[in-house]
Image 1 (tube, rainbow, N blue to C red):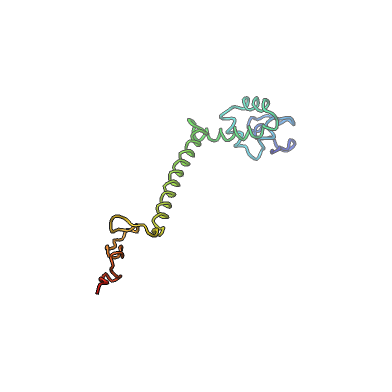
Image 2: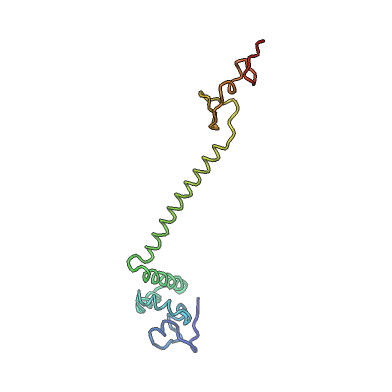
Amino acid sequence: MASSSYSNAPCAACKCLRRKCMPDCVFAPYFPPEEPQKFVNVHKIFGASNVSKLLNEVLPHQREDAVNSLAYEAEARLKDPVYGCVGAISVLQRQVMRLQRELDATNADLIRYACNEMPPQFGARSDTNEQNSGFYFPSQWNNNNDGSHEGGESSSM
C-alpha cells in the first residue's frame, strides 16, 4: 500500500481535484503523488465521488485490490471505450484457442513422426510386397520360405 506524505505533497487525487489533502483522506493511501495518471484515469471513467463511496463501502483490507481493479478497468476503458477489459480478455482467449490448436497440430505431427520412425515388428508381413517403411521389396526378398537362397537362386542342384 503506497502512502502519501501529508505535510509535503497532496495525494494525486487531491492535487487533481485541487483541494487540500487531509490526514484522513480516503484517496491518499492508494493514489500517491508519484502516480497522478492513475487517479486521472479512474476519475475520468468512474468519477471521484463514486470512487470515494466505493472505497468507504469496501473493507479496508480489500481497498488496494479495488483501486487496482478500478485503475486497470479505467485504463482499458480509455484504450477501448466500447469493450474495456472485456475486449482485452476476448483477444487473449482467442490467442489461447489459436495456440491450443497449434499445440494440438504439433503434437499430432510428433505422434505421426514417432510412429513412422518405429522399427517394424518382427514377423509382421503385409499382403502386398510393400513393408511399413514405404519401400518396395521384391517377393524373393520378403519370402525365403520357397527354398531359395538370398541371391534368389534355387537350392536344388
